[in-house]
Length: 306
Image (cartoon, rainbow, N blue to C red; front, side, top):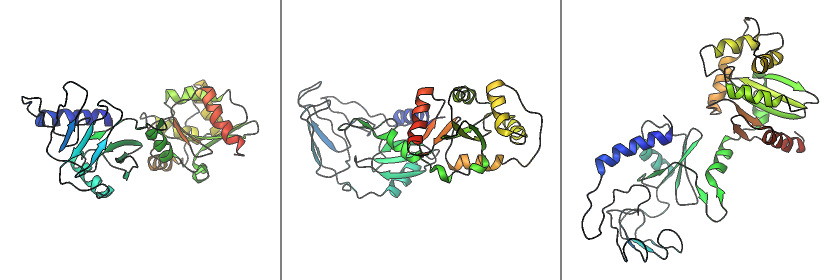
């Protein structure tokens, strides 16, 4: 189950158990679900369903905090918290990690970091989730900087996924060179991956290319057998292209193929699907790429002297 589905399922169970009663006189008590005011806040609005409507809950993240907004669903609203919680910055990432594990024990946390946006970033593999200092709510999706219009989540994932190309153990890869080999890429591929085969057809149109293929057998029981036969053939680079592009398998062969080492490498680099490409500048791209995007990445690195 992916993170969004897991969180949704958990949220349905939590909401069913904690659904608050709706009282008269336009007053609601919040169980601090995403998108609602923080517990303990009194919100006075000059627009919306009811003039001067108030929403009250039972706790808050920042005693005495006042936030005045000039945009959003309630222009000009003033938010004042009267709760006795901790001040900003008093909760550590380790404390947030502990709370997150208590609420979502099935999700393996890679790291927790404080962001400059008043949120905590929870990394699960290569996925990012955002939460508050009490893990009272979680958000899974792109975080956008409203000032710069920058997709903060995507930028962070690119940063986290970057790998120094010269630190890759290229001796574990099948090497194939065309022309002067000045364009360089390393790819994790499964021999039964349809998108990998699509990418290989695209690579046929790229001149002057060096490809390091980490054969990463994760999709089918016979992926490992095909990986072994290709690695142990007389010309592994040719054998790989023959299979992926032309559907021609090499004869059965046996040798000390580094399959387990490649699997361990992929797990360490958090390669969760194929194809996954690593370019000379360290950037990572998952999935088959159209020719124009592929060339843009390759030529950017070539111009840097890669």
